[in-house]
Amino acid sequence: MDRILLIPGDGYGPSIIDAAERTLSMATSDVEVVRGDIGFAAYERTGELLPRDTMDLVRECGTVICGPVKDYRNEGGKAVNPLESLKVGLDLYAVVRCFRTLSDDLGVPGLDITLWASNMTVGSDIVESRDIDGITISKYIRSSSYSRMMARALTDLELSGKGSVVCVTQDTLFPDSSNMFSETFDSLFDPAAFRTDHRNVQYWASKFVRDPKEFDYVVCADLYSNVAAGIMAGMTGGNRLSPIAYVGEGCNLIVPGLYKTFEDVPKGYANPTSAISAAAMALFDMGRRDEALSIIRALTDTYGAGERTPDVGGTLTTEQFTDCVLSRI
Image (cartoon, rainbow, N blue to C red; front, side, top):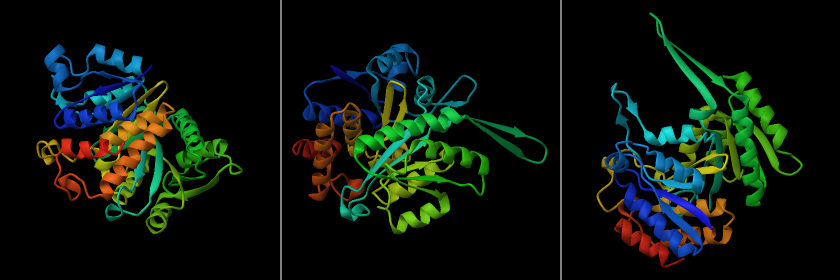
């Protein structure tokens, strides 16, 4: 039996992860849901922010949905985040985000686009050195970070049944790394099988806002992936509506889209949309396409009916919104 590990995290995390668990239970009957902990709850239980037993569960299950985790201070006063440590420890080398407009009043009607990029934390080394005049920033990029990510993006594109993909770089600013990125793209994405193109990030952005449905997939150099994601999020309702998946060999870690701060969320009113979408993404990755699509349709119908949490123009609590979605699965 397939297993999905749910990790509530901190703050409003438990409420939206509960929504994901209820969604999984409604959408499928033969997936085992397992619970782990990280952050404050883990520290209270074990004295560690990222306990060993949680790491063991992550490796056993392979598919993980984790709520938001706060930054903590180590003994030296440096900010640390156990979720970032988890990504590095699992070698999650790729990042994928699916942006979908759930209601016409929130963005471009019918927009459904997928963004793939390398995980900068894993795929490169960045060094800052200070001298009397300023700071020098050096970055070393491993070519394998590009090829591994793009191989997974290609598989995802093939499974989706979609047919167009654009490679986004900036060869006027970083010609060598951009060329390496583009060459890797050309070696994997066959123009005879897909409609492909190469774009500098400025041109891609200006064209995307005018014709956002031109391509189904965007494969983006990591330096610009956050910019690309911000534009796509802005055209589909905002960052907190779409989850972020970190992909590795044998493990996918899906994190719901986050609010700017933990204090931005009124108690009981956190929007669980991205956590519910994370459940759909997890099922899709397991090959359970029909179950995943049933969740997305239920979300779309719920938004279309105007049943929403306050941050997107409604009045429902987290639990009430989840009830509305589940009633449509």
